[in-house]
Image 1 (tube, rainbow, N blue to C red):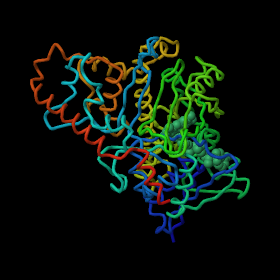
Image 2 (image 1 turned 90 degrees about the vertical axis):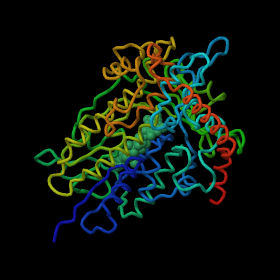
Image 3 (image 1 turned 90 degrees about the horizontal axis):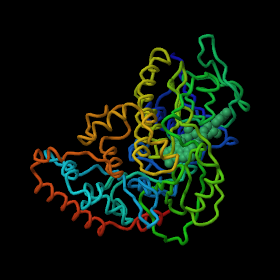
Image 4 (image 1 turned 120 degrees about the vertical axis):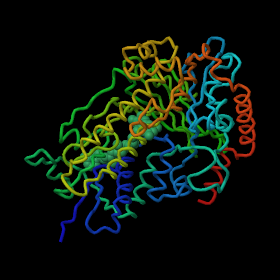
Amino acid sequence: MARKRSILIVGGGTAGWLTAAYLARFLEIRDNPHLEITLLESPEIGIIGVGEGTFPTIRETLRYIGIDETRFMRATSATFKQGIRFNDWLHAPGADGRRHSYLHPFEAPYYTEGLGLVPYWLLMDAAARPPFAEAVTVQHRVAERRRAPKRPGEGEFTGPLNYAYHFDAARLARVLTEQAVALGVRHVTGLLEHAVLGPDGSIAHVVTREHGAMCADLYVDCSGFRAELIGRALGTPFRPVRDTLFTNRALACKIPYGRPDAPLESFTIAAAHEGGWTWDIGLEGARGIGCVYSGDHVSDDRAAELLEAYAGHPVEPKLIPFEAGYRERQWVKNCVAVGLSGGFLEPLESTGVVLIEAAVRMIAELFPHNGPADAPARRFNELITARFQNIAAFLKLHYCLSRREEPFWRDNADPASIPERLRELLDQWRYRPPGRFDFILDLESFAFFNYQYILYGMEFKTDLSPVRNEFPNVAEAERLFARIGKFGERAAQDLPSHRELIRQINAGA
Ligand code: FAD
């Protein structure tokens, strides 16, 4: 009889449990006597417990692993996220009270066969036209008016407008645990003390304090920043991206609402400050806020002042240092890293969970059912490295277009800190908007229109004026812009308030 093969996941944070549940479903563990998945975690060490913002891909992931939306939302204090509003990124608040803000919504710009609206928006009088996101999608009006992306009972994980969630990360791990265990994952608590390598440099077994040696065919390192296997045991080099992304510290805390029915934003607010930015995430019962900053530009004390000024009252935040970067080889021999152990860039645009989802899908699809455990390593490493690099460039875009004067922002605008490919694309985008052939989809987490929202939100100029006559359908474009405005108004009236929908979802709990 064939030997039973096994996967050992080390770590029970978002990465560990998402990996466990996804692989259990994909590899049909419950019905498969030949394969088993064990997850080892140390409650003593605990999880990082931040990571409250997500990207719309999370809906498909949750659906796939069999968690229903209502259960998930009730259990994790979740709310709907329709995008991110960026305050003060273009310039600091003026002495005259002048502020700049723009929305990066999840809904793609309205598109019709034949007529792309973007060139027509670019050709409008810059002083008179509506903001880009408002012109091209109804979601701008809906989100700005704190409306929900759908009506009560309007389908699990679906709705007329694209959305993701804000959730409480500690509670998410609990929901995922329940689901993974239901899908057949064995849950073991204990502390991994060290790993023992075999003669070929692969992991022979790991030694735990409570259970002695544990052995598997494939080890998945989800041990967070400790990187117990991929880093400590296998010594895989870490590649910092500090030359491009400068933030390396965060202060995080939760603050209560003034009253239980306080209005609830349906986007993350990312407000720039002198040395980075603050996040503001509306969960069901509290707001999660945090200050992300560069320790080279701002001291911890100053960052705490900035966070308190944002909150409007004293707060007691937790300090989380991090180093922006990733391991170029995240699959080495019989070990693959997922989550913070593989790398982390920074909290902007919620790419932590996105990268976990991408890694897990690849592991599932490339799974070495047959042949050596590292057969997929080379392909996996190429793909995940490209994703990290491309996300780093997308995040840099948010910073490098700023006209803010503080040293942090001037350093960010220095061309030497901008990845070469992004510089090349920015040169091209002076003459045409981003398009889908700028990117290879399998290597990207963000689409060309995500770039459009950032570029035009930050008043980047794509100059089509010398070829204005090559865009003759002005009347048709104006009709479509008017329709988007009208539908947006109607949607904002018809959809329930975000707070009301969240109240209804939790009412049956
Ligand atoms: P962890 O949560 O740290 O889990 C590690 C696990 O390994 C724990 O269970 C721990 O007990 C276990 N472990 C470690 N060592 C051992 C050992 N020796 N023996 C046994 N068990 C062990 N992502 C987003 O998508 N959106 C966001 O808004 C976002 N915001 C962030 C803000 C900050 C400041 C930071 C730092 C990150 C943010 N992230 C965000 C990233 C996100 O938090 C992570 O991607 C996500 O939480 C996954 O973490 P993890 O599971 O890899 O690590």
